[in-house]
Image 1 (cartoon, one colour):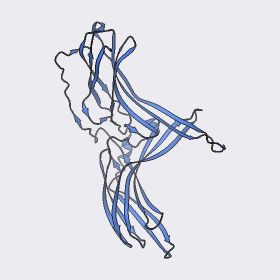
Image 2 (cartoon, rainbow, N blue to C red):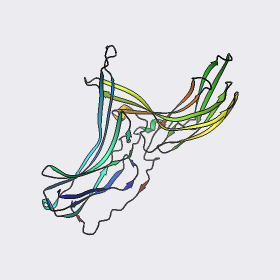
Image 3 (cartoon, rainbow, N blue to C red):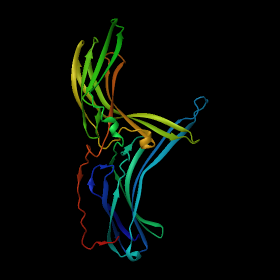
Length: 330
């Protein structure tokens, strides 16, 4: 039976931490019996990792794949607690800890290829043997370190896309035009993107559906088993909605739509800023041309940024009270 009855991390009830903020918490240790010469510590860890497979040599007659990998450490901090007299009596002991998050670390992120994760881990050891451990994951919102380069770009954005098609059955031509208008192109995580779309149906059939989505385009940078630098671009949907309308031939309709961004999410960045991943975003409108296999797609580049000035994290301040009989040792 282990000497440690229970180990618990007590953290404030904060849904999303902001880069540059602080973490205050407690490690609560419950011992069945006295523990001599213990090592009690809390670690703050943030790291990124990616891995994908790609064909090693497409000219070969057989398929051979190689794994491309990379990793990065964004934060690693440890607080070792001083144990007075070199031992802990049986019962409950609490240890207060404090960490400052670096201001330039990226947001929590996960995909099939890579991830960026943060966690706080409390450990109790004796004679290099781990007796108990607890880990708590953190959701973290990164900030744009050089966001000032975007501040001058506040003009409205209008993007128009057109797709032509020929209907062989009636020997006629047709087209669908999408025009997306935004008042701005810079947004924060958790913010609503409000935009207007003019849909012009110049076909002989009805247009019934238009899809809108925010796409996150990630550029991954990794190394092959031979140490060669490789890159891979992958795209995924952040949020999506469908607008059902019955737009008759020769009719133009304006639709006002809203897409709410999640929180947290990576900000627009470069490989230099995030080391192994770069992020950019697009607002994409899509409509199938009726009675064809063709699709008209309008892409609007947008910028996701977060700063200490205009992005506030909702925090529920929690006061940590000591229970009766709790012994604090630092």
